[in-house]
Image (tube, rainbow, N blue to C red; front, side, top):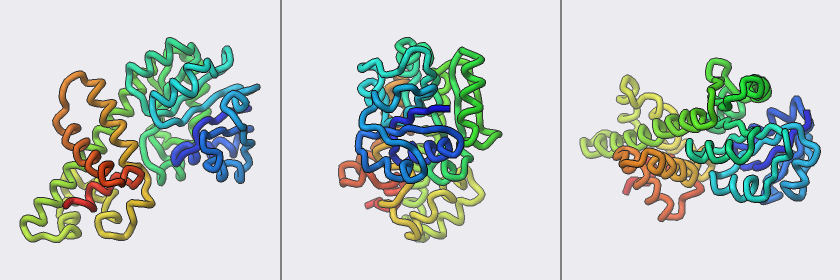
Length: 277
């Protein structure tokens, strides 16, 4: 299949690499240097998004957020008539409804997980569209990205977008919980590494295990998987979507915004754990 892949950032690159194994991929990214890995793996590289989609049977987008989707795809009416648009960008349910109204081939396909699962092809993946046949075809297309038990088709783009926001809410809130647990441990004279061990049989075990290498200093947040800027953007989408305050999300966003203010927006969001004042 001939696929146009727009957006080869950290996650987009990993997704595109899986598709290159099976399809004819033409990639485009606003910063051309970020197409290097996919080009070396066999993708063609287009100079513009418009050039990338010429002759494509499917267009896949992996952009930073809904505003980037509007600028890159919606405003220039980029998707050719009848061509399936697979959008992996994290957007709100309202955004997904807007994009589905604008392009009737729109399929929301947010992915759940970080770069490790992306490389391993074990992400969670939602595929959302009311078009059952299109949903079936996209589920087959994106199967190389997913843990089979976490590949889920749903009957609307908005529902897929909701699933992604729920997943990232759990991530942001549990990270904030871990931050506070580390603070409490230190207040009680317990070292961070020991606090991590103590959390092993609690509801924070998953996030403690995931972020332990950063807390213990075994990994540098500058070489992370999911940036402060990205999850802060998602937290703002959650708050805007809820239409009322989500206190735990608001607390997590406060920690993330402190990291952005310190110039660490492009670091892994584990920086809220390693820079606690």
